[in-house]
Image 1 (cartoon, rainbow, N blue to C red):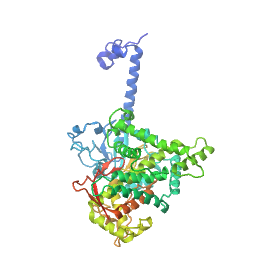
Image 2: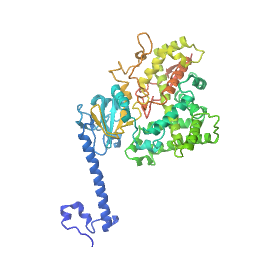
Image 3: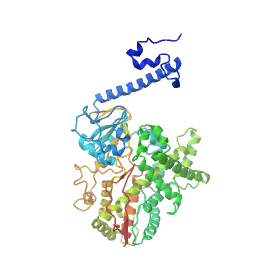
Image 4: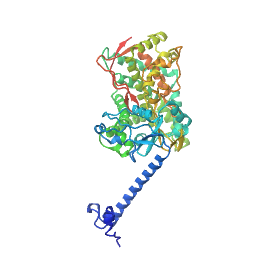
Length: 559
């Protein structure tokens, strides 16, 4: 027998009127089962909403780090859904700093019609809320660490808790949480990282035996630069090609010609993908994963970039598998494939397999190219803008090496000004300004604040390297800050461009080699100046996963 609602229900509870026979629109189906199904769906939605709001209320009542009060469900980043023109009409930022447990609604959305670069924006929020503060992405807490003591405390003293990686929808879709950079902290990551690091050392990482590859590559760089004569040009493609070729020679056992169309396309895709993944509406995929599959705009572009780079790398791995010689491993891929075969004999479910290799190679190719390329481009730009420092560095190069002999890592101890200049470029630019996000793997109390399990931990390395409490006049380019009274290198504990703790950059030694040898080779052979008709580019940089300089043109003079 069909249950009936009393007639007065439509009066006392109008929203229940549709449960009566005939109350549900015919298009939706008016059977009792349809009504009950719809009611069940609404009750489930109400339960989900209530549980979210309850969790939100409990969290906000605990002693979490200070920060702008989030809106329920959307958190502090609802403005990403708002058109830029409308943002120009909003004035959200304001009020006074608050203590833990006291919050102000909103977040510091720029009111000039544009948006501040995230690293600068978060640094400004740090001045308002302190060196540890919280934001929310939906209901997920993001903890920003803004000075060196706080970053060191979290990444070193709380390493076991804060070394994990968050499960970010976009990253999970692209990387499947494999590889080295984005893989979760644990035994699998430790084994893969240990093998990768030891294999890179086998092929010369941090050793003089790798120098010939740099010398060979710089010959091609010099040829390409000389082709431009006295004309202005953008140095980015040449530098990107050369840096990537060093990684390719170690990983793939070969280098690519600078005219190779596929190689150039992959490098362009890589840089573009890193930029739009965090600096476009594609970032909304991290709020709603299904947005990643939208067939338009940056969503479609990023998806196509992923497809093309995947095909490129998998084709290279397949070529290696077909030509593999166990007695003569040529590169990282060969070594990994051989190791995977040995491991499979012991354990058919071994974590070393061709699928995981693909993601490690992706990390090496993408992260290893983009970070060092941008640092060298920043170095060229700062030399062009500071000709007096450029001349002093060249004088040191001439005194120690001369203009005929190629530089060597053995020259580095005798060239403190050159090393200090590279360090100052790294401090000023910090090519991974917000590090790679970490995650709290368990509930913990950090510096008196409650940090729930799953919270994203964001070390703001840009803020660390612009801290006026550590760096005198931090916004001025001054290599001498890294020199003592005797003109020797002055080590600074707060200088951590490669990060700190257990997730410190695996390629740090390779990057240091590349930076020194490429920088010295460039200034030994050429002087750089901005093009006559060009303006100084905005020095806050173009934010992506890495921080790139805005495009600029230079003119070179052969020395």
